[in-house]
Amino acid sequence: MITLHDLGDVRRCCDDVRRSGGRVGLVPTMGFFHEGHRSLMRTARVADDLVVVSVFVNPTQFGPGEDLGGYPRDPDGDAAMADAAGVDVLFAPGVEAMYPDGARTTVHVERLTSRLCGASRPTHFDGVATVVTKLFSIVGPCHAYFGRKDAQQLAVVRRLVDDLNLPVEVVGCPLVRDADGLALSSRNAYLDETERRAALVLVRALRDAAHAVHAGERDALVLRDRARAMIGAEPAVRLDYAELVDARTVEPITRVDGAAVLAVAAVVGRARLIDNLAITVTPSGVETDLGAVAEEQRA
Ligand code: PAF
Image (cartoon, rainbow, N blue to C red):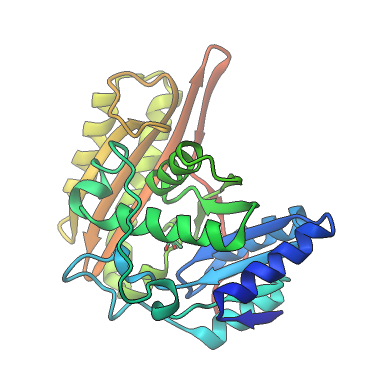
């Protein structure tokens, strides 16, 4: 594995592989890897000839008073994990390289960004959409791997790729959970033991919704309100939202039909956590997806 900091070096490296007929896979991250990141890297390793993992704690997706300064970082641990996962290029640009003084362009995806996390973090998705577009532009035609835990982010990235005709195939990958059920997130590092136990109410509420859907419940408001009530009953957890939305448009729905997501966000201690249940209802049946349990944990 090589580590590159220079945007031009990454572009050349990707161009060289494509010129000789190879495929490029990009895993965009903000570092502090966990099994969720590693599963993206493994998926890319199987599908692509050159696997590029970007590590960039993107300042423009953090709002004032958010955790940019304290965001967990472990460059050496990340490099060791990426190397072990068979990554070819670790791309770790500096803030100055990504946002040279005078940068004036922002990518804004209408509508999909106004609800859920976009309502609580009004500048967040502009930051995400802008940095992801820049990464796609640097790396060029590729498969780009994103976890389904960030269901709204995935919908936003798919939309911007379509709208801007970017030569990128977005691959959504399974949400990964710890053995106790908590969705893996770099921000779980903020939780103490008591907070972590309290945070498990999120997955309990989603499991409850999955059971209800399999038992035949299709009323989105009933499902949403059950989740709100369960999470709201946990005193150490401040619910931000629990909404049932269309998976592609992120618009609220009243009946579950087609591909939907029950998305939840809550603040526990210092950590803002998100989680979701994917629900697909078709004439041939119903499927719910809570993700997979991690095989290994961070040492
Ligand atoms: O999901 C993340 O880690 C970030 O939002 C991303 C996609 C790397 C953009 O900074």
